Length: 183
View 1 (cartoon, rainbow, N blue to C red):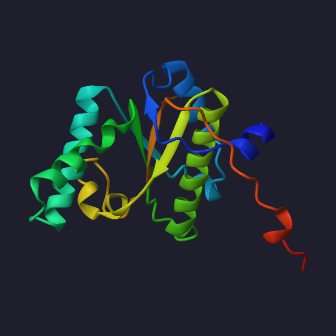
View 2: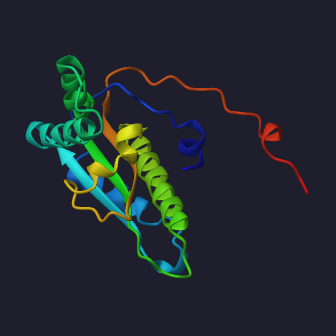
C-alpha cells in the first residue's frame, strides 16, 4: 500500500467502467477508516452513477450556479450541466456537522478529507482512476438543499471515478527534506 500512496496520481480522463459494487464497497470501507475525533463518523458519500443520475447531478450544479449568476449564457449553462459526465461515477463527499462542543467542525472536515484520500487510494490500488474536484460549486450553499444536506454540513469535494482512458503518468516525488524539519 505504501507504493500506492507514493505513486498515486490524479486522472482527469475517465471512462466506463466505474468501480464495481464490490470494489466500491472496499473503497468506502477504506474511507470509513479515516481518523475521527470522538468517533462522530462525520462522513456522508452521495454516489451518482449512470446517465440519469449524472444528468440529475448536473442539473443540481446548474441550478446552484444560476442562483448565484442568473445571467449565465447558454454555452456556460451547458458546460456546467455536463461536468458530471466527465466520468461514469461522481461521489459527493460531505463532512456532516455533528455540533459536538468538543469537536470543532474543522476537525470533521479534516476527517472527511482523510476519508476521501483513503477512497482515492483504494481506487488507485484497485486499478481505477480518480480525480478530486472542488471549485466554487463545492462551496456554494445552494448545492446543499438538492443533496439533502443541512446548512452546517460541508461539501469537501466531488470525486470523479472510472477507468483511466489514458496512460497514467508518474509525477516526481517531492524531496522530503524540502518539507520536513526537525525541531
